[in-house]
Length: 437
Image (cartoon, rainbow, N blue to C red; front, side, top):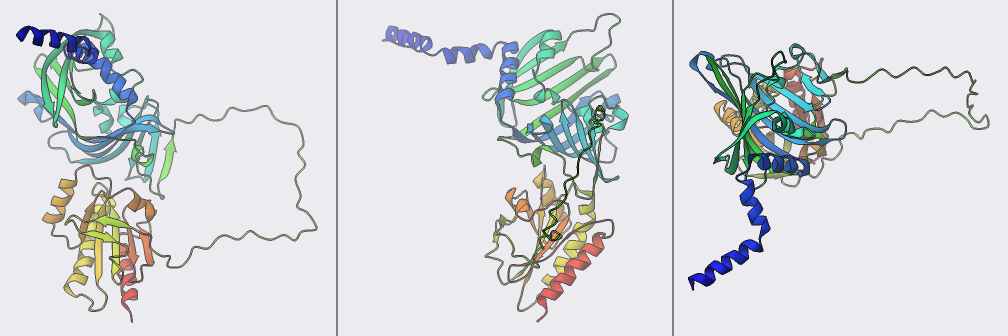
């Protein structure tokens, strides 16, 4: 009987080259990196939470950065293959947190400068002192290269396969790359001496990278890790920084058009038909108090809110982001507004106030902040993308008031002439008008 079992096992191995190849991959670090490069080329895109942390000697530990962000990867029609990161960075242990919204691609860096109300677009050659600090910590830039890991494979002094580890619930193959020392007189290619990549054993996608610096007394490791990986095509909006209507764009990547030889031909202007009277084109008028779209979302208590469920009630929708500085100024004022209608409810027409947090990388932090501040408004985090699209939200924060007949009676956002308090005052005035008999 044992003899027949051995024969059957041999037949199964012969008929299953895929299994044999998988086994070979687990023992060949170069093959693991090559398979990961192929997986990155084939994947349509993904989103994930990303964190950056540091480990090192006591002397240097307090100088290492930390970060929490939302990352999306995909192909944008203008930027090509791109990484979009939205989150918060501490450059050192004691540094104040800096919010950032950036896009990294092979031919351009894009970031939002909220202090100057500007979207900056720069070539990769832009000086480090002229771009946000976070660009210096893009340890996952390898993901969007044409040939991921190829440079490492070409210049590595050695590759070593380490024991598998589980990262964010994914079993990973671990490859340690020791960088070759630069030739005498050559310019160093980077400060770190080793890289450790954690590659998912099932999908071949990276889950973590460690950049290790070992220069005598200076020993430090920067760690960037992905969690909650969701493989799916990403929309153009998910691969671009948020661009408020009031922001200007500063783009130094566009070349000036080349001068052309003058055209000496005289063009005869086209004249209107004299027999037809001239009429000035009319602009389509925006309807007053348009009906609200057929929206649906679920708040953090699990209650489903919809156009139908809010009929006969006044609904305030506050679209914001906890990462947005203007939103941080407006949110407490909105809570005061909501509390006014909770403490003194209208007997005939209730007023419901919903804060809708969008593009949040860490929903738990948003929920905790809502609870810690005892905000009176109800909360929704990262609803379906259709919700802000239905209401054509372009600027954060934006407030919409829908009356008890499901018509939009107010929609505004912050402007140079409308600060947070003015926005809340206008919102209250719209509610008061809707409640009038």
